[in-house]
Length: 319
Ligand code: XMP
Image 1 (spheres, helix red, strand yellow):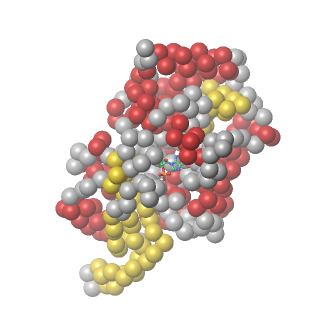
Image 2 (cartoon, rainbow, N blue to C red):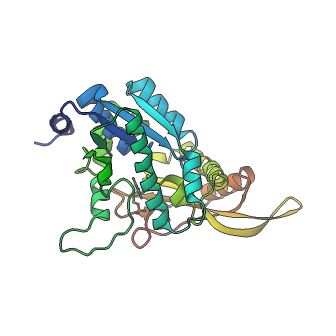
Image 3 (cartoon, rainbow, N blue to C red):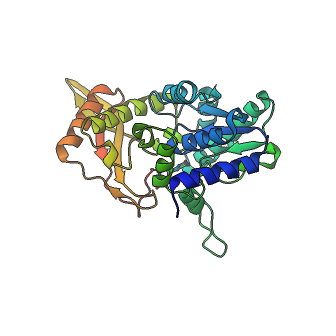
């Protein structure tokens, strides 16, 4: 019968068989999926694996530091951190279409990897934390409808020129199974319980043009929202909670002054696998408190709204 312990052993054998004595690069996104993939692969092949964490400037507050601590200090996994913020911000200038953002970010990621792979003296394999829902939402089945809902940046094949084969040990798993595997690999509950975070990061939570300034505003609002959720003891009851910075300015009043600033939307959903989702029913007092704190503490935001759309018909992310 099937256990996560047996799955882990089977995958380790698969990885060893696939990789041989080749070199593997794993792209870390800061999320649970790529972290679990990396730790599993490291267990299989040790220092034949190098992790590359691209700081594209689209991360949550303190996320880079958390990844560095976990991988370098705790697991002792070789890790390269690439500071690519400027490059991503430059490329995102003037880009407002959601699919164009995703395509640019996915493509740029591959470009950064290619460069890092070269610097590391080449690698034969690229590891990714692709999950089963990523596979079925992005790829149409033979004979099925050929509709791409969203092009997930971590799926979709690598350009031939990279000459690297994919290692995707989580391809058959749903999110809850990845968390179980993470625990099996020694990750603590707090880490495996982290809410999912999309590869394109904050870019798909900033409808319209993405700038460093807007990322900074969103990071602050998001951190306050998550802080309140943790303080209320609700973090683990929620599948995903995050703030979205809207490209809409509205009028407000602060003391004796008129303000004309951005609207921030808050989203929180429950879900089993991300394929469908229900809105998390916060009580009004909780949301009022979040709104007050965000407007008071985040310069550039003067109005906060809550998203009451379930999936379907909405998606979890706004883009
Ligand atoms: P949607 O917005 O499609 O999201 O309802 C479903 C789940 O997938 C996450 N998501 C992504 N994850 N790369 C990822 O690794 C992506 O490009 C991506 N887009 C969405 C989303 O956060 C939610 O958990």
